[in-house]
Length: 315
Image 1 (cartoon, rainbow, N blue to C red):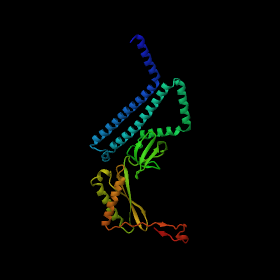
Image 2 (cartoon, one colour):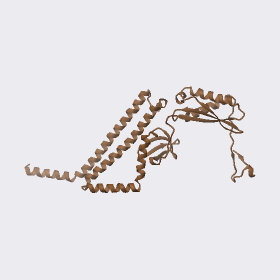
Image 3 (cartoon, helix red, strand yellow):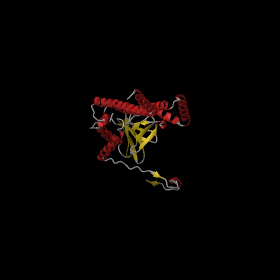
Image 4 (spheres, helix red, strand yellow):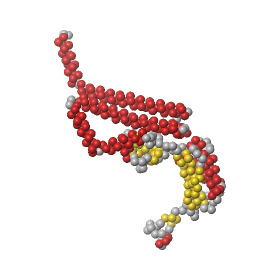
């Protein structure tokens, strides 16, 4: 093959590469973005796994659920680490997509200055007509995570939705309610948060006893039962302080209502309250104290009362 033939072949190759340069570059950018996202997401997951594993080893537990019996700081470290892992994962995806998009625009459109001018105008129009809510969602999400208002695994109440936080993103938070409903709440719409998983919780039980019952005897029985529970088995790890009787919450001709409170670990107040109610019933039955049935007075559909000729009904 002569020099002329080699020159022709080389010219054909260069022509082919020139024709497919832009599509090949775009494909390369997309593949590079996918690989970069996978690598960075893998690193974030590894860091989260190492932190969680380190906390579990330091507390001598194998499963994350067992951290409920560990110091509160350890639980918050795990929850906060997982939340930050979710947020950083979302940020990585958003940044990589944005950078890849800008690079593709730079490759496919020769007049890059004009292209960026058009992009800037489009972004400005978007901000003017609706992107404010998106920016608000993102900023609120970042502030909530930075301030540790709640994290993955926390039980929260944000108004219309309440339950266990399953994921925290830069735009939305998902909450699983007690009946299994999965709520998706935009971060910008969260105006207040009630977190039932931070610091400590309190089980509050209002116990009605007969009006004629001896309050001193009933109080002693209730307090003895609650104290015995707080010192027994698994409940010792869930109850943080000795139970307290706060006194008479209300009084009527039917019953006297005593208020019993127990300080518990976060998210344990409901289980403690259920077990304590069962034990209190058994203890009061053994003492011969029956819990009275409280009656409510309701009006007839016309709204009449006994004072104006109507007949109140017991329910």
